[in-house]
Length: 240
Image (cartoon, rainbow, N blue to C red; front, side, top):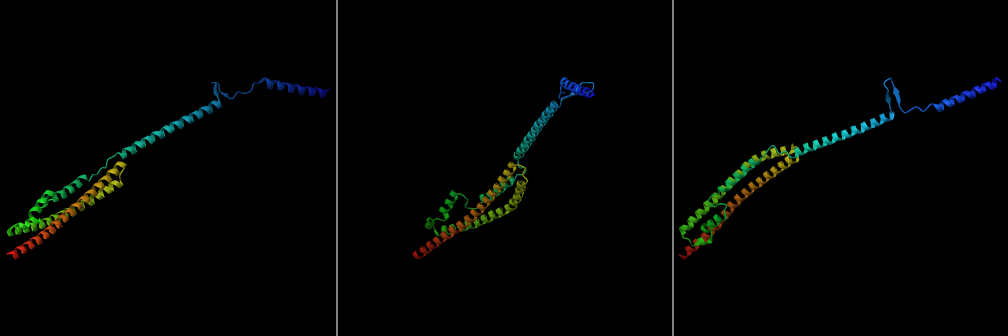
C-alpha cells in the first residue's frame, strides 16, 4: 500500500511540473533592469553598432577623399608655380653686345649691297682698266679692308670670350633652379632658359666664325686682286 502511495505521489509531481512547464511562456530576447523599465535588446544593440561602424567608415572615406583632393590641388599649384629666377635679361644683354660688335664692322659691312659695291670698286677685274695711280689707291683700300676685317674679328672673338663667364653663371643658376623645382612648370621654365642660353652661345659662335671668315675672305680677295693688278702692270710695262 505504501509502494502504491509513493508511486502515485511521483506521478502526481511529474504531471504538476509538466503542467507548469506548459503554462509558463518562453523568456523574451530582452531583459528589464531596475525600476525605470530600461529594456536591453541584444539584437537591436548589435544592429545599432553595425550601423554606427558603417557610418564611421563612410565618414573616414569622405575625409580621405577630401585629403586626396587637397593634395591634388597643392600639386597643381606647385606645377603652375613660376620659376623664381630668370636669366633672360643677361642673355639679351649678351646677344645685344655681340650684335653691336658685328654692326661696328669697318669699311665692308655685313651687307650684301655693301659687299657688292666694295668688290665693284676695288676687287673686280674691271678695275684693271684703271690708271696706275688708281690701281695703287685700290690696293691701299683693299689692304685697309683686310686690316679692318681682322680687327673686327678679334673684337668679336673678345666679346664672345667675355660672355663665357656670364654663361657659366647662368648655367649654375638654372641648373640649381631646375634641381630644386617644386613643380613641372618650374622645371620646364628652367629647361627653356637653358635652351635659350644654348642658343645664345651658338649665336656667339656663329658671330665669331662669320667675323673670322669675313676677314679671311677679304684677305684672299685682296691677294687675288693684287696678283691680277701685278700682271696688268707687268703687261703695260712690256708694251711701253
